[in-house]
Every structure is written in C-alpha cells, then in structure tokens.
Image (cartoon, rainbow, N blue to C red):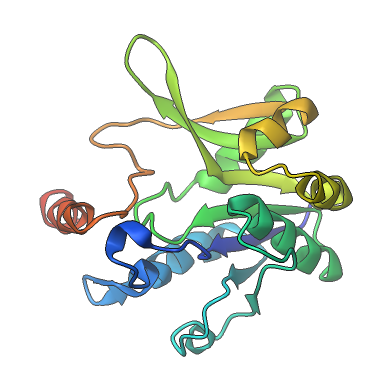
Length: 207
C-alpha cells in the first residue's frame, strides 16, 4: 500500500488580498490554513505545510513547515518540489497537494485521485470540475504526485518551467473529476469579495 503525505501549499504572495496573508484570514473562527489542514489530515498518512512565511501562526499549527527549497518565487511547482523532497525523507510514495486558500475542497479528494490513477493511464492525478460546453476546469494545485519525480521536477524548474500542467502533461495526467453542485468545491479566496462569498457559502450550505 502506498504511503501518501499531504502538503498544504501556502506560499502565495496574496497580492489580490492587498498583500496580507490570506491563508490566515479567519473563517468561522478558524484560519483558511486551518480549514485546509482539517480537511486534508484524515485523508493522508502524514502532513506538512509548505510556506515561506515567518508568521507565528504557521508553526503554531504543530505541523512541519517546509519552505521552498528552490530559490526565487517559482509558484506552485516550487511547493510541489519541496513537498516531494520532504515526503521522500519520510518514506512516502506520493504527496497530495491542496491550496491553503480553498476551504471547501472535497473530503474524498485523495481517494478519488488514487482511484483515477488506477483507472486511467498517467503518473500524476489532478482534480477537475465541469465547465460550460462540456469542458472541464483543471485545478492543478490539487494533485497526487509521485515523489520519484522530484529530480525531474527540480531539473525542469532550473530550466525555467513554471506552469504545473505543462510540466505534468508529459508524465501523463489522470483526471480526478468532482461535481460542481451546489458550487465548485475548489472555490478559492483570492479577493475580499471571495472571502465574503465563502462566508455566505458557510451559512447557506451549513458547511
């Protein structure tokens, strides 16, 4: 049986939230970061937070804080790489990544991604939800990644790769499909109006 480590990606710059650390915004008494931790923890064997912040709230989670090992802000792929390297040291086979600003992602996320790898070809699983015209939205920060690809990813980053799907596609991507009813579970809090919407979702759907 594969060992799966969870990694909460919290390394964004929060520029659309006025520069404040959006992961620490309180929603229903808990930070967005803690919501993500609470949702992911039951789904994995061990868990860490990828962050470059020096805010005390991060170590206060009681979890390992894994900063980017690739220097310079390289986006989500740098967090995936750091998570892979941390997980490899812990003996894990895969990492499951989630974004720290997405408080309502599915509680069966990891299981569905595992099933998609079994049912489809590909080394990597990435979440998707339906869009208009029978298309789908990719959610590339929500993925299942074999730690064996960590050297390949570091090399790609050194060569200037920054787009998650562009790096993942040659390795084969299995699609983990989730419903958008009553709303897209990968809705993320980027702007102040998104935070207000998240509060409305909590009240309306009793999440």
